[in-house]
Image: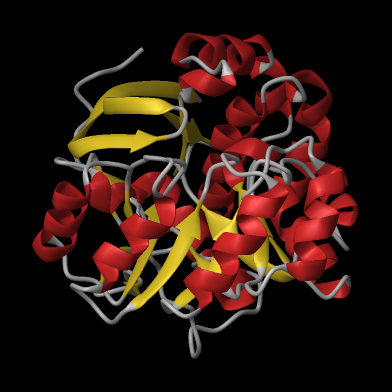
Length: 341
């Protein structure tokens, strides 16, 4: 009923953010079978969040009988049943929840977005991320991967100069992710300059605990500010209101599609913009995110595009636009299942 596939996803380029650099990303694929259909879910093992593949597998295996007893329920019902046991491991909860949604969609003979009553008429473009590097290498990455919308990772002493230099090579919109590296005064000053450089918004400019600073940035910034590290779980949505203009929801951090949909609804009720982001992950995780697109203002789902070799096929992103396969559930199929745990 449960199978686990582990992979070391090789990145096309060394990926650097303020947390560090990496060339590979470990990820876990959960395969959940009800006897007739199999659903696939994913969660990347992000080291700076203390997440390991082994830990995720152990957490899910511990409640395998509980999952088996409730596999014919809805994904939302299974999430509520298993959450008390997985609340300390949201990444494991995410992988299981995505697998259950994929399974449920296949069981109902519908892709998830149709199951939710959504359509694909107007979808936000997905950005492509340029990690921190020398300016020359960042420019080269843009030339190697032309895209209509870039997210630029910053967090250096010369952040504004980097954007000024990159701007010389393209006219497309930039989004800036400071990864909590700035102070309030720096963020306000940088925003004024970056606005004239066709930057759309700033993501997590301050440390997640600096709420006083964020109140100041929210009031005086020339650009909208989007919460990332400050918005992890459902209870964070209400707290971000009045401090951020929008939130970036990540399935692994909040525990999957089930809580993410509730978070999206709450953020909209509070008048905030909504973005869903990703980790460095395969098409399994990215395809799950894609079904939320009709509900979103912004999308950051380039994880699979950063990989040298994907392990699955499903939703594709072509020039920023998302193309859905003609399959039910999340629409994914594994390409390589040679590594099994």
